Length: 237
Image (cartoon, rainbow, N blue to C red; front, side):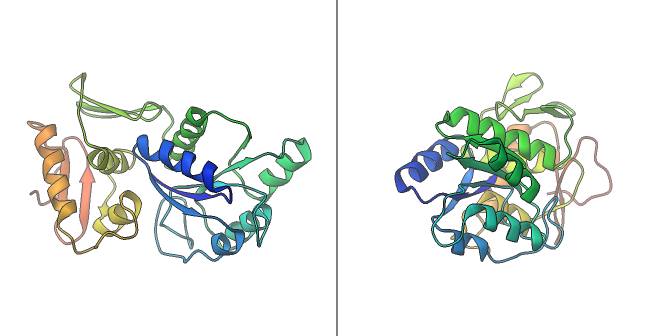
């Protein structure tokens, strides 16, 4: 899961970033409303028609320098940016909450807060965004608990590195759908990854070995990957 954090308090931003990274998320931070409102658009992504496909969700403070967070949120939605937005703010009045939801927020959490609650709410938003009705996703022998962010294979816990977990989570929450290499790079890695690097191929290979003897990840050559049980008709690596 790739998260945009818009927060001007440097210490708080570090704390949130560290907490989300520990939970296997990729985080990009910006500290002012002007920069946040001018994020470049890129194609694709679930729920992101016409908008940025770089992020699965955003954590947005309202009291930002440059442009207020509420205005940033309105600009995102006006430009068709459909990623989920969790507002994280000290403003606790009902009128502020109502205004945020009317502007396009998906959730609203007031400060002070528990980091665990931020993590849980982001995972719930991700599940809603990709249309998963239940917290546990099942594909044959593989299951993924979207709340605890844990995998099991044939009922036994599956040990994965943080990068492997992000890749597999991105695939299993889009069951049967073609996920392009570019989409995986955008959502699983930070922006400084070389898109021509073979690291993604190496990680996919490691995941396949851990899923053996089950062949769940299927390659469509030149297009991308699908995670699907009993998949037929695709070229396999």
